[in-house]
Amino acid sequence: MTRRGIILATLATCLAPVLFAGSAPAQAPSAACQTEIAKFCPNMQPGDGHYGQCLVDHQKDFSAPCKKYADAAVARKEDLKQFPACIADAERLCQNTPRSLTRIRQCLRTHQGDLSAECKQEIGKRTGKVH
View 1 (cartoon, rainbow, N blue to C red):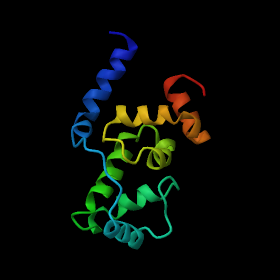
View 2 (tube, helix red, strand yellow):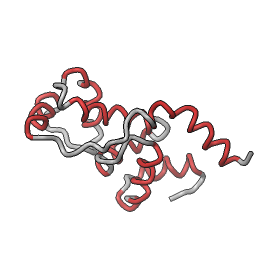
View 3 (tube, rainbow, N blue to C red):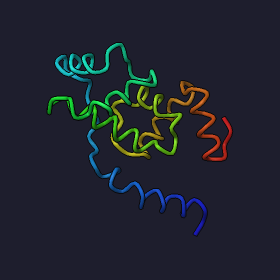
View 4 (cartoon, rainbow, N blue to C red):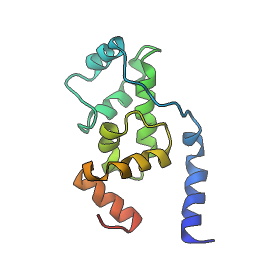
C-alpha cells in the first residue's frame, strides 16, 4: 500500500464516527441564537481564536434549537485536532462547511490565500508542502 493509501485508511478509520456524525451544513444562526451566542461568548467573532472554543465550552448551555452551532464547533475542532493552528481559520472561513475533515480541508484549500501564516505553516509541516 502506498503512503497516501495508508494515511487515507488511517484517517478513515479514526475519523469515521466524526465523518458520519452529521453532514448538514449549519445555517447562519437565527436572531434568538445570535442572542444566546452573544450571552455566552460576548465580543467574540468567528475566527478570532476564541469563538469556536467558547461555543465548545458552552455547548450544554445552549437551547436545543441553538445547540447545533456549538455541535458544529465541536465537530470542526475534532476534525482539525491534527491541525490546531487552523481551527480559527476554519471557524472564520468554513462555518457552513459540512462536518467532514475532507470538506473542511477542501474549504481551507479554497481559501488558501486567506489562511493565517500559522495555519499555512502547520499544513506545510503535516503535508510536506511548504506554503
